[in-house]
Image (cartoon, rainbow, N blue to C red; front, side, top):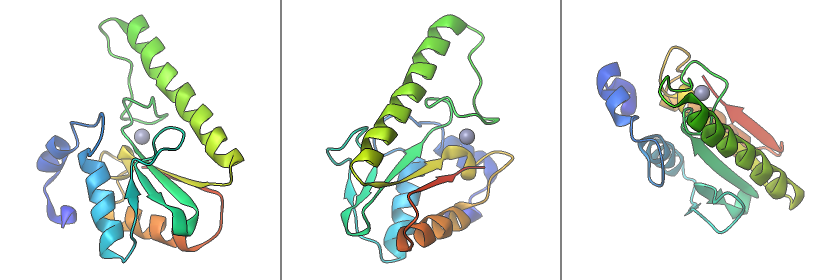
Length: 148
Ligand SMILES: [Zn+2]
């Protein structure tokens, strides 16, 4: 269980955040699978959601806080080339919002699980995050944001 991994190891596990099959994404996937959910990966929908559960009318994004410019303690514009990074990262965040609107308008329910729910000061732990996600999947509310 990831919950017994020490913080330093967990931090290393979380470092390669960009792209597909990132560690937080795999942790969430494994947690959902263990709770009996079955899903598809990276389906062809706006923003290529990481986890898709058509039966629940739901998609899940697992976002790294740096790459998606999350309003939290894990996000900071790098000191080197700040203008480049600001444009790039805020551009990513804008795209995320556009994707969420597009999904919403076609009736999808949308969950975003942020990296900071799994590490950092506000960490709630994998089980807590996956429990919240599972409860949301079984319910019928349109959106959930799971963050630290
Ligand atoms: Zn965050």
